[in-house]
Length: 131
Image 1 (cartoon, rainbow, N blue to C red):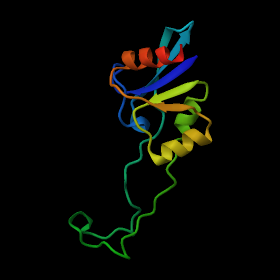
Image 2 (image 1 turned 30 degrees about the horizontal axis):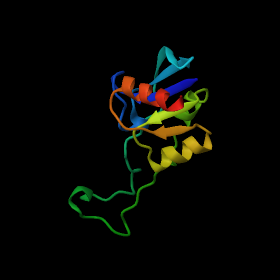
Image 3 (image 1 turned 90 degrees about the vertical axis):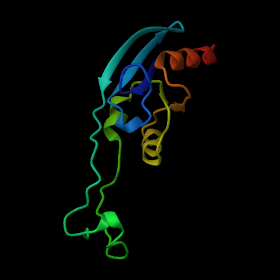
Image 4 (image 1 turned 180 degrees about the vertical axis):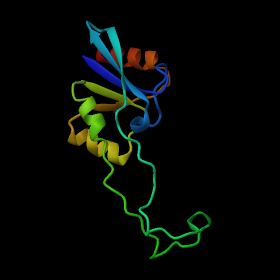
């Protein structure tokens, strides 16, 4: 069994799944952690930047909002993450946003929202529930 967990420090689960620095991929055999592999998150983190010509000055202070306030945003996807996690059995996460949820379901990546901070405890608790 392979379990993936998003992390920024290799000790705790990342709070923002799609923005995690890497994924810890645990290989479980006979109910025990056999190995762990850390894979860099290849998902590109695009900044929230409007296209030129569609954004009015003064946005930060409430001016320019209304019908003229337009942003051109591309579709937000996590295709890189889905490809990266295609061989796992379960993705343990703290939270899943609407776009991530859609992409995980579309990619048939099974996930479970878990509590706790420490990855070692999360893995241990998850394995206890399987018995």
